[in-house]
Length: 443
Image (cartoon, rainbow, N blue to C red; front, side, top):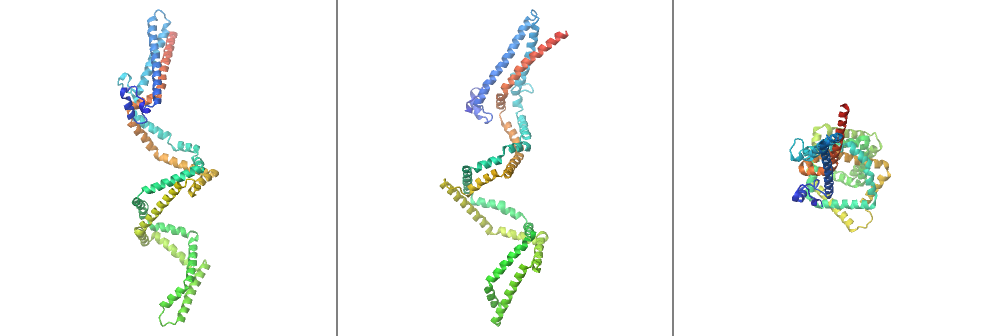
């Protein structure tokens, strides 16, 4: 377990300290392996420095007797300088060399917050860009992968049942009062703020485009003619009831015949003649009504008041409650049927999901569109969140313990940094030897 790994510098309290750290900073078994390898490399670098120091002392003492040892002395002297300088540089990254608070040392613990901010900005500017994310998503072709997964019957069934159980569970958790309040805030309140007259004007404009309203008039004429035929007896009785008592019945019948025939003839004439004067007056009335909806303050006010009266009517709230109750009941019944009959034939939702996956797979153009939609959705989400990600990285690093952060980073890269010490020792020695040779050549 990660909590069993101790910090070698924490002594007996190392386990407790490690268990209290954030997960990113806790020492793991892999970190223990890295620590052992780091210690080994430190010993190699230190041993090499000791070797060249001993070599320097021996060469310095015997140089007078053996002049050729001057080259050895120059090599070892420069090697010591290079090795010590690089030891100081590597150590200064993680702590104060020899515990002395020299300025610009212990860089990682003292600059931790700045490093976190720089890391967040680096990730934001170089990884969370539209070009990088879109290119990666295009190569992954997530739409086709999702379609392949969805086309398998077992997967479409699993998704359909998970969706049904999830929606049914959510419907049971939500209280009816909460749903009603959500409807009031999310729908009714928006409708109250939305002006009715401009919306109605756009609707009538859409209806009148291409003379669609004339087709509606034709339907209305046919409906009126059918109504007249079906209710001719009622019309005659109504005329007889409204006429004076002294009018003979024959006159009432004649009057009724005239009225019914006149209305029928008018309906037939309007329906048969596209240029009938009534159609022109109908066009004018519709156009005048649309203009009033857009420009007439009185008409706009009446439409707005009608909308408010409609939304305030108790039947609106009752309708939303009935719809919610019906939806909740249907979801619960559907989820229960799925649970009771696990081997049933695929239902409509499962077939629709599987068919959707198959349709994407056999239609390259549709697959390309789905890939583009997913890429655009993810890319947009990343663009909206990239600054938050940078701030999250900076805040997370800022909350870390400075010493634990330094220790964790050292375990990750410290072994490689020891090669800097070794290379510094050897390169320093070679430079010293080169300078020694140049001095003799010029002397």
